[in-house]
Image 1 (cartoon, rainbow, N blue to C red):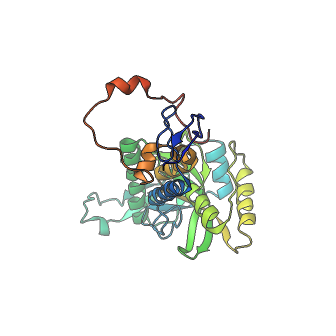
Image 2: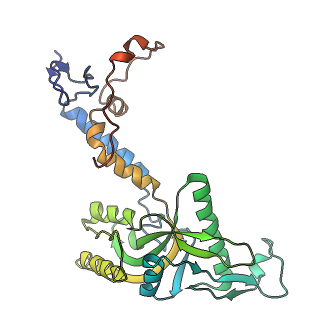
Image 3: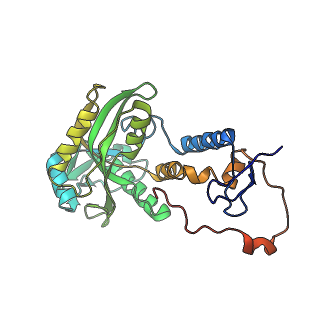
Length: 314
């Protein structure tokens, strides 16, 4: 005998468990069916995130992504000028030593370079700086042109921590989106802040919250010259019991967050997913509908429509 009950959304009477409410389109499930959907949502979430040492957001030193560590100016000065003052910085320019003009792949290993100083300096030999800066620029440009996503970030602060699964790791903390502008081979690149929100490393914050029960502070919406020191000290307080360290290192590298956005959306829309018949069928909480070639046009006018599209966090 099939159990019937009122719809939990609209109150329609005598809706059978495992069936879709004819009034609002919500599927009604018993506890086992709901747990099956929650388990499937958790599997989808896990597949979206790279929680390995290869993810530079979790372990910058162990990843293969191109990166450069700033040596000048000091962290507080760079933060005040670049983040607060939104100043554009001239990058150091790497040029072949006079008399050497070829730059084919076979010659690069023995090419000699000199560095024309800019507003910032990096911990790299001239050849390393030439190679890494070019790769960072190419990666950042490709992500914007092909996906419309800013992946280039200047990071302030570094968390040195340890995890049973990841081992010893170093992770960037405050991530500031930025852009590199290329003016050709005879001019230095320019580094400027992108018109996007800066944030504390979201992948690290999520990992520490769920795996280590450590909550990182939120970055202020309107940072001031004192914000960097304040936030880094708050991070030190948050990880004091674990014995982890916070350093003032600054790095330029590319990071990707698209999958993290989907991860958060799946979590925010869990209550909607629990009543969605398509999600329930994908999670095998209800049988898949029978195949049909009919369009069912006669029933289109009677199908329920949402008053508004569900939005995460609302």
